Image 1 (cartoon, rainbow over the protein chains, first blue to last red):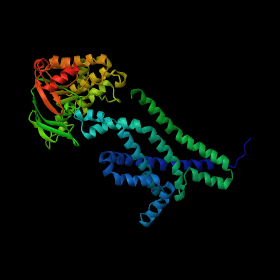
Image 2: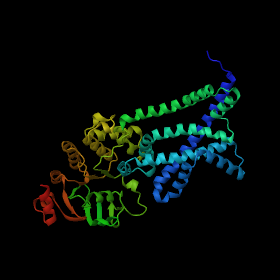
Image 3: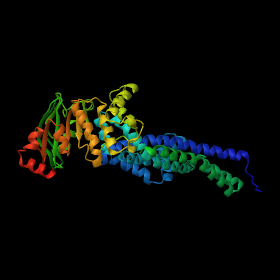
Length: 217
Length: 240
């Protein structure tokens, strides 16, 4: 019915690529989210004027194409003789890129918590930190979650660009097989299915959490 | 005792409090009435330090609220405030709303905090709503929950900022009844309100604010029966 030269070891090779995609994504989204929360909270606390330099830097990371950031980042680390492996460079650049977007999401989430609700928390004797931890964080998370899921899925797909630094992630693995086997449609189809299989649970998780929270809000 | 001495407060160029003097003794219920923008609500938020003041002094049991080094978080434990908007924490159940501050601020054990919360919620008639989320309740119920939430901190003073203004007329009564109950129990209260019958009923003294000045203060009989200041007379005529 269907004839292909693709072997099990080729599939294993694709799986290795997918693992690399997952690893880069997991590290970058985790680090980027932590940094994004710090930057987001800082921007809210400092106000528009004092956080202007930070906002400007983050805007640069959001505006310059990721591919350029990766190539420049790699060049810079090499000029600075940091001796980073491509994986490290990729994760650092992707983390900053994620953090730039994430800080915007966090800032929006915090701003969505009504000032009067926070005032009520403070009037009960809660400290700034307690207000952040018990009132702002849960409420802002609910607001930010859909955008954050979108960001995570986006970063996972954008992470394909790290192939330019020589990392063999899912897309690069597929390219290699296409070059060797000359079956582009079939291999890219498999590649697409793998991307979908990785993304789908993340998207579903978002939907699940939204449904779990929404009846209360 | 809450002592307010010559307090002035401006929002940018607009001076909303123009030298307020008022002393509220333990066990006293003082009601503040007056038109919109007369500075009544602002005074309440200054009393527990949510808003800074420009000059003057507010002391609570001898502690200067706006002095540098005053631990406002500690001070606020004994001065509860309930706002016009009830400001429920929407992600927490009614019980959790009331338990949160006793647990985190007072550091009580879960069981102890729950005991206090249940007691206060029963007190305001919400015993049946413990596991409900606030948005499933009426405005009046949410406002009573906010009162229980403040009471759970065992405050010595309670400030009520137009707590019935955002409620449907039919829900006002249940909240006012709760306030009356507190007044009868001897809670020291400062209530900003537009409910004249309530002010007349529960107050030891009623203050009339006009354009940032306390134009007149007296017993309910004095102020409602024989207002001295022309502005008080005009205001009372307009709300009757």
